[in-house]
Structure formats: C-alpha cells, structure tokens
Length: 307
Image (tube, rainbow, N blue to C red; front, side, top):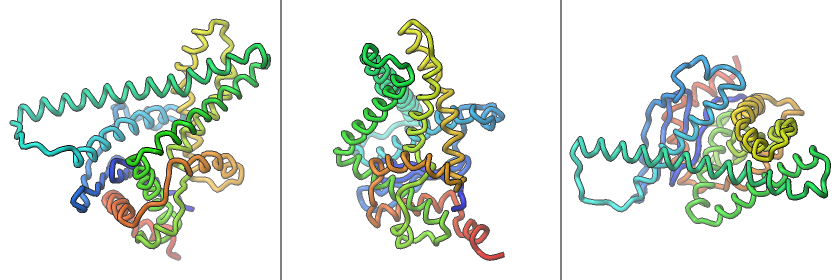
C-alpha cells in the first residue's frame, strides 16, 4: 500500500478530508443535497520549524486536529439547527462569531480535561487500589493501562448506542474506505469504495491505542513517593506520550514491516468499534470531500501505472 498522506474525520452527516493545509467538509443536508466547503487551515503553531521536529510535531498535530475537528463539527451541525428569521448586521455577525469561537474553545478545553480525568487519572487510582495485593510496580502499571483501555472500550460502546453517533461511525467507515480505495490503486467510485476495508492504520482510534501502550512504558519510570506528584507527572508527560505515539502511527501508516503490522493489529481491532459499514449516499459524500483536496487520478497514475 502506498501512503497518500490524506486524512480526515467524520462530522455530523458528513466528512472532513485534509491534505496538507487544505481541507474540505462535505455535508449531506436535510434536503439531500451535498454542501461542500473548502478552506486552508493555519496551524496554531506559527513557528513552522517546530511542526517538523520528530516527537515534537505530534503534540501540535494533535492539538490542530482537535481545533479543526471542533471547527468542522460546528460547521456541519449548523445545517441541522432550527432555522430562524433573524438577520444579523455585519457587526452583530462578528460578535456572534467571536461568541461561537469562545464557546467552541471552552468546550474543547473541558473535553480534554474530562478525557484526562477519565482515561489518565481514574485508571491510576483504580490500579492503586490493588497496591496491597499487587506489589510489583510494573504489574500495577500494566493494570492501569488495562483499566484505561477497558474504560475507553466501555465509553465507545456506550456512546455508540446513540443514533447520531452510529451514523457518525458509518461516515468514519466511509472516510477509511475512500482512503484505502485509492491507496490500493483503485478508481474512487462507490463500487470500489464499498469493496475496500473500513480499517486504516493511520486512524485516530489506533493513535489512542498507541497512547495507552506508550503510557505503560513511560509511566513505569514515574517513581515519585507523593501520590499527588505521581498524578501531576502523568499529566505533564502527556505531550511526551502523544509525541511518541504520533511517530509510531506515522511509521505504521507507511510501513509494511511484519513487526509494525503486528503492532498495528490491536488498534485496527479497536476500529471495529468506531467504524461501521456506510451506506452508498455516505460514500458519495466522502468521495466529494476527497476530490476537493486530493487529485486521486494523478496519484494513481504516479504510483500504480507502469512506467
């Protein structure tokens, strides 16, 4: 498989695809039409050199993904809000935009804080309950990661019961299938996409698995006596864990090495929870998003046609 470096994510009734700094959001509106928006995304990090340094770039890439994800999710949700007859002046529209940006920023910060509490701090305290039974610090660290993965799986299973989330997971599947289709040398058509896999090694779900895996190794070296200090160090090391995990998933996405393939399997298995088989009209939306940011015909010609 030849990596295309294109990536994306599912939004409400649609897909966001990104290639370099350019991104496109395609949304199936309530009237059945597909609305497409393209734009350039400017990284929060203005010093570009930092975004190219291994193990550092992953942190900024993760933050950029969160920001762009929230932005495109808000955009897609706007098509499903109740319409009002209120017409805003330019000044009022600017104030409303600032208000929306503030709400989006607060929501993102709260989401990150809740995620850290649920998936980083809570597993530590649960594993620490077994301190009297499990004397080995390594085993307790492994238990902490098992609890973390278990909480993640339970969370995914719980939210997947929601109808909107189920459809989002179907769009997530459509995103993967489109990328797999072109990376395996097939024309980007609905029929070819349907035949492609809904699992992909560069998926965010796999990234989260690597975060959990890397945390086993990193957290083992936390030897502070104070329980509060151990928690604070865990939180402080999150950028390090994210940076290492990003490099692993970059390698996984571009390598067919058997060891790398084996390392990718658990994350790929977890994707069965976050991706579902899409309907044809969902695939059409995903194809529109891809074609706005990526010349797949030129890609196939360059990588798959005989020289």
